[in-house]
Amino acid sequence: MDDQLSRVFSALADPIRRDMVARLAVGDATVNELAEPYAVTVQAVSKHLKVLQDAGLVTRTREAQRRPVHLEAEVFDLMTSWIERYRRQAEERYQRLDAVLAAMTEQETPEAEGEAS
Amino acid sequence: MTATTHPETTITADPALPLIRIVREFAAPREAVFHAHVDQTLVTQWLGPRRLVMDVDRWDAETGGAYRYTHRDDNGTYGFYGSFHEVRKNERIVQTFTFDGYPDGVSLETLTFEDLGDNRTRLTGTSIFESLEVRDYVLASGMETGVIEGYERLDDLVAK
Image (spheres, rainbow over the protein chains, first blue to last red):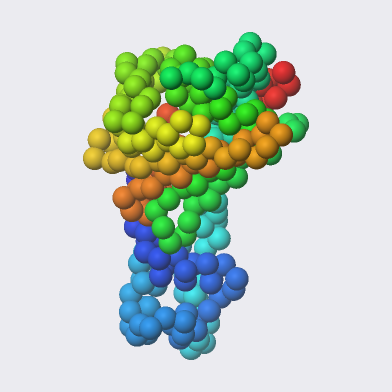
């Protein structure tokens, strides 16, 4: 696993940081806005942001003094694509199970199953 | 592409908990779906990725039992093993799961078999990992199914 991926994994391993990413998926926000829902200091939120920035998940623009935090969508999309690929692997497996089940019902009656000890 | 009448697999990767939950319905009675999970001959027909050969070294699908199998292709073999913590007939299977390539990692998998009536069954599989980081690594690597990328066989299967 390369360094970039490692950083993304560790960055997203924290529930607060995941929550912040979810909020940023809706739109850019300032550090103060991000800090509002949590019972933590703005400094603590800044530390979390630093981790997300180092992982390349978010960037901060130099726009005036607000310096809103911006989510790098393409990196975040990685997660979505991993989940979808995993889902398709499971679906592929279960379509094979469909075929096995279809062959079973052709061969035996359900009663034969019931009394097996 | 997937012109199937079966409800497709749904997957949940909880943002705050290190788990993956997969739900799928089958057009078969619960007894049959359960049997296809514990019978070694039947399991080898569907569990492994299509292009890999599945060799079972051990398969004791009962409470306190264990399993070990490998997936094999031209590039090498991928081993998996674990214990059957509980095999409750037609209802539930709880097992551990470890990939030889990552021996420090172990996940706990719970499968439940739900009778929906009318010869339909809902299978819910929940895998719990040690951390969100490990869970995400598993998602990213597709480790469970042995590093497969291709779905070229999918259309053939569906067309049957």
